[in-house]
Length: 125
Figure 1 (cartoon, helix red, strand yellow):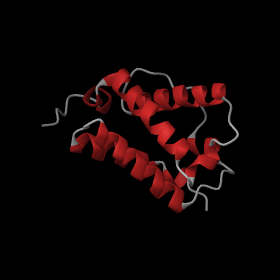
Figure 2: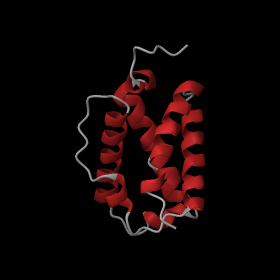
Figure 3: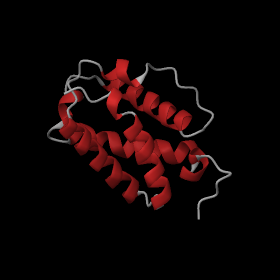
Figure 4: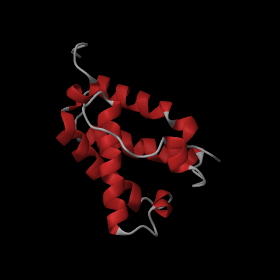
């Protein structure tokens, strides 16, 4: 049962658990035949920075102590041409990654609910 006194960050297992999910999720996205175009011309240092920013963003948004210093989601994704289909593929990869880590259903729902709240600022086409 979910403890309402704990933040989502705590219920997910904190920094290390969130980082582990990101480190599995990003390669899935990069290797996806449709989504891979967003990373096709990125250098390793850029991808490493993106991973760290994503970890910080997710930790901060889930109630953790990390400071997110990146741009807001609309600014970060502006001009990328992210479609509804791209979004659906992304969320399918996220769901599969959370399932692989055996994240409890309530926490999966909370993560997906938060991620879905960012959709309007990311999807353009």
